[in-house]
Image (cartoon, rainbow, N blue to C red):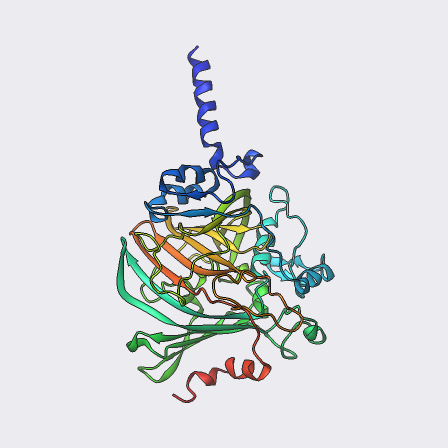
Length: 437
C-alpha cells in the first residue's frame, strides 16, 4: 500500500512540474488560459507560468509588479524576413555545413541551415541553431541612439551613458547588387562587419568612441580564426587605445554586462560548445507598443527598472541552446539561450557562474520594422528591400540575481538601413576616431 501511495505521489509531482519542462522533453504544449487581447495584471501572472522559463519565474519579482498591464498579442505572428533574404536562403540551401571545431564552411548568404533541425538526433543541432542566430536577417547594419542605465535593488544610480551607435554589414549581403562580389560591399572584403558606439553624455565621458572589426575568418576553427579588433578613443588622453580580445568577457565599466552579452550573445560561435536542449512555446515581449528612449526618457520599467511587463507579449515557438565556453578562463560555466524559431532573435538567456549557480538573467524587448504606430517611418526600405521586415531587439536588461543589481540599455529607434559607399569607407576607417578632435 505504501509503495502504491509513493508511486502516485511521484506521478502527481511529475504532473505538477511537467508544465515547466521543454516540449522536446515532454512531447506536449500546455494550452494558455489567456487569449489575444487579454490584459494580464499582477493578480493573473500565474497564467503566464507554463510559458516562461523556470529561472525567470523563480525570480519574477524583478520582472512582474503590482500595476503592470501586459497585453496579449497574437500567437506565432508572421515575422518572416523580406523576399531578398528568403530568395538567398533558397538559392544557397544545402550549401553550408559544420566543419571542424564547430566552424561554418561553404556559407554565402541567407539563413545557413533553413531545413528543420532535429534537436534530439542531430549532434550538430546546437551549433546549427547558433549559426542561424549569428546570421539572422538584420538589414544592412544598425543605427540607433542609446541610453545605458545602472540599477541597484530598484534604485537608479546617477551613473549612465547616452550616445549613438552604428554598425555596417560588410559581407554576406543578400542584395543582388552585391552578387558579383560574393556578397561583399567592397571587393575582396575580409571583414564581416564594423561598428561601435560613441558616448555623448555625461560630460566627463563625452567623445569616447569604439570601433570593432569582426572578420569573416571568425567562422573558421579557432586555430585559423582572426579575433576581433577593437579600438577605443579616450578624449581625456586624446589617444586611441586597442582593446584585447580577452576584455570582451570582462564587465563593461563596472556594469553586469560584458560585450558578448549584448543581444544575449555577441561572441564568436566556434569559441563555445553548443547543445540543443529542446523546443517549447514561450511568451515574451514582441512588437513593442512602448515609446522609450530616445522618444521618451521617463518610461516606467517597474520597481527594479528592468521590466517589460507593461507592453505587448506574444506566444512564440522557441528553441533552447546551451553555451559552454571552450576557454577555461571564461567567467561563465554555461549560458542557456531561448531563441525565436522563425527569426532566431533572442528572447531570454540565463548565465551561470563557475560554480554552476544562476548569476544573470538577460531579457529583451523587440520591435517589428513594419509596425509604424510608435514613430512613423523610422525604418525605411532601400533598393531591393522596400520593406525591411526586421524583428529586432530594441532593449536589453540584465538582472544579477546574486547581488540585486542590474543594467538596462534602450535604443527604440534602432534600424538597419544602409549607408552610401563613401560614408561606409569613412566610417570603418580607424583614423576617423581622432580626425577633427
